[in-house]
Length: 314
Image 1 (cartoon, helix red, strand yellow):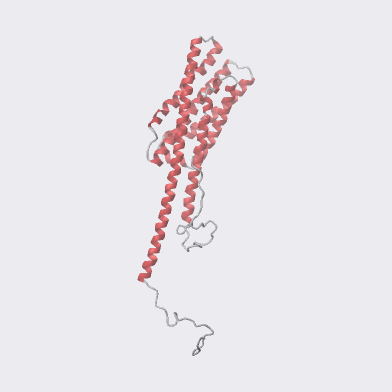
Image 2 (cartoon, rainbow, N blue to C red):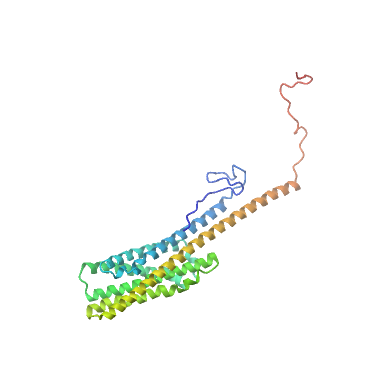
């Protein structure tokens, strides 16, 4: 993961650090200081770092959804705590997405309808997560009725669906960013991301619905075995999708960082070219308009005070 670079202000001619300089010329070489160009470059650098940090935070939010796909939600008692943790993770993801919106980074991908609708889907995820966590807490304190259990199961199914949809939106943004800043699409393996990310919640639905049915009728053992097997496949797909999304977001962060480095290097190269051009112009001006010849007496040597005419040195 790229680290935040320092922001020095070197002179484009001699490299002297100008951060403490208040004048308009470099105290080392006398070259003109291009403050406005440096401020613009520093602003672009800070903006790119904000985007990288926000992507890193959302990537952590994606990683934390492994709580659902490691099978923790299917374990009695532990599963209730896992759902509450997932609700906090949804809040974390919402904050990270808000930072991406405030940086206006998403404005560069308005051609993708999924990315445009992503903030709305994220709000839905957070709302369902809050209600799901509250119902989980209430159900853990009181005796669960069939109605409360049905509401809770439906909330959890919708919750996992929205988490997967928003993870897919993050992966789509990563694809678009890598293609835009690196000029090439990620590895072909990522084409299987939709299958993994949406197959996981779909295969987990029978397991959750069986909880409601089990309260009404007795479930044969073979049905329970098959639903548990489907849940295992769902967890495998969920883990694979998280790994893929983590990787593509990390590639996008690296691509943004490298792109900004190249942009800054090109800006510095342009500054150096302008400086060289200005030096050449000064030399050309000197050739066309040479300095006037010195006036009589300008080049005379001033004698020492103890020198006297006609006196000889011993």
